[in-house]
Length: 459
Image (cartoon, rainbow, N blue to C red; front, side, top):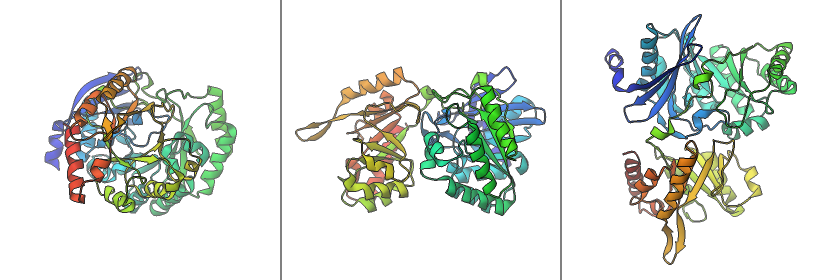
């Protein structure tokens, strides 16, 4: 391991360094495959802290966070996380005393590499914090390791109703399930749990929200502390509450017996504070390959879904057209091991009943406040011999990319090995492929086709 650590510079280079008025320093790192991440050095009275990223992009799409606006590209390796610490050490002239894994990405979505990092980084476990938006399986696995690393939960709401509005992950994991895993962590480790709570004007910061939050935390029967954060710019139209509203929320928690502090914003002027780190979209090279699933067309539905679960580096694009297939929709939403985007073709009331509905996408519509602006561009029309790919639609993709550089553009229809490069070069973030893969005669053929498409995309 010593040899690898001494050669970490081969994994990333510093492309840009920005220093805030308060001394906070943000680094833009270029990884060796051309992708970028950001990390932050905070100089504090008790020592230096580095906030590192765990993924290139993020799948979680929390509405108040800039990190998910460009989608997810890939996980970072243990070495690529270590190099962020090394960069901070070199800049500060001494080793950092604290590490927080709170940058771009969801650490427990990259569990194995994060654990490898924790096992080799030269910082004491009690001075390391891992922040998760709430993946119960990851929390339980983390607990089973008996670690002394601090667990931080991005909660940001007192109940499921509000949490689902601002954190899509809450559609899959309700608070009851989340808190069951948190209690498991506490019972296993006896470590205090930190809850992060961003105050968002008109959403989650009234006194009644504070009282409900206090009641929920007390009923968990764990040791805990709440870190309040005034929402930082970067979450679209959302804004922080007025000072008196934030203080009233904090005061209500204190009077309810909750251990709480208000975190001071650091590096806000250079977009280095909580929720502000993001991909550099114009330099991003890897994009999502999304597999279209439509039970109305796919005969052997369940076995195909299970097969797709074994594939790597793909997401799911679920076509929702009729209540007739509600059970099939529910199956993939509950059982998919990949991120699922739900393409709804019309207003269907039964969608409310589906578990983990994910990002709902309407054709050519912009969805405000979900994952930044999301556009779906259809690139086919019906011809005499079936659907025909429309290269002219790519001009629309280029115009959208130029006008909305941070939006998420999904290209759907007629994409195959012959035209996928042109779709990529037009500026798409997600490329949907479907029936021509499904019609491959064998699982091996389908895997080979997906692998070939990924190779084209990532050249």
